[in-house]
Length: 485
Image 1 (cartoon, rainbow, N blue to C red):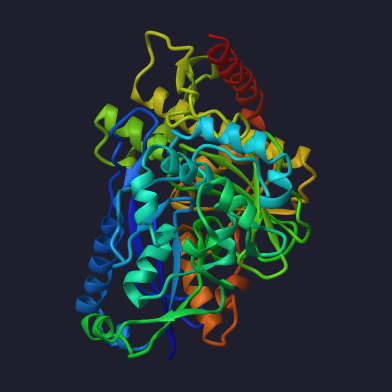
Image 2 (image 1 turned 60 degrees about the horizontal axis):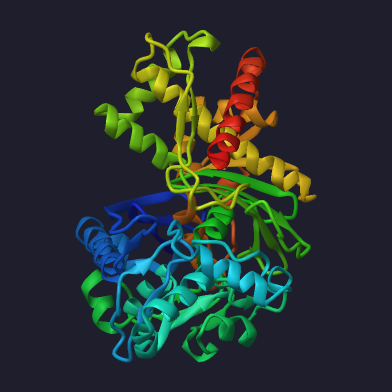
């Protein structure tokens, strides 16, 4: 029996799953990660932390499931996108990596926008804080010695690939989101690189997501109980890998992901550059397709944040209690989830979260409900931005850790007034997509038998629609007032 391992380098954790040829999960493991916020707007992780967590996950699988590990036919990689790992000539990280939710490079975005009027037409999106290109320009300006010492600039999953294989390789899907690529052509752009203060020779070799992007080092094969010369697939960024995991592999398919961030992804067979509203267009992990994205910077992380403040011991129990509570619409506060600024539709790293309409009777469950709704309102902003841009949305899947809550999913379905499909393997998310890409790199099918299983559909809840619309109108006022002040 051939098995495939998907390794997802997330923001809050590294996750690994082993699946068989029909996508049946055989084993999984996880190791946590933390974010360093040394200054306002900064968000960083050290690349060594990614590798330490990835190695710990593989060690655990080797200890607990040696027979399964010996049957792995290929590894696939997924990871948080946009992180900037500067690596020296010896393969060592030079500094911590600024992450996707880092907001320090606003001035560099304005400069790139001004210097290259066709930036979005070439890269697929306007320069926005958090994306790789403006952060690299910021580093070139503020830490020129670090850039001088740099021999490779790698994305998070590709730094882990370097540790696994010794090869500096990326896939065209994840690489297109750096805003350093001629996205339509699928090659690095010397113009974009030069504008950011680098040359393309520091960028990794490019392969397709479902192709081999290196082989496992012999000493690691022995350590983890894996086959010698095990292929490591090109893989994809977590948005594209999540799409593959959700079966979003044809034009018109879409997904909403409730992970640390919230993502609304629509597959399109046309390249439609995003020129506003904080949207972006990148290459999909499926050849011939592109992904139009909206992104909410705080989704499930907003729920984790409020749970921590309220001293919630079990988020699962907290969600069940919120669902069981019989609130009247007038009792529910209104929350905007801009804890790390916001991308879609505001493109504003300075946006801040708000909580309003509080009354004396409000308790933890009221506030928890407000957070769920606030994230749903933000996802609806993405929905509106994508439909206004002409994205062809036929079916919408719900994935990510937040997809475990059907209650939360029904709130989102009601706000956008569209049914959401819950794929059988939805909670596995990008790790499953990575495993599927590993299977494709080994000559197998991209999707397995489980993809044909019946999905659960979350329908909009008509009785709660009016109250949600009223609170969404208040939510929309939050940003306008904050921006005005």
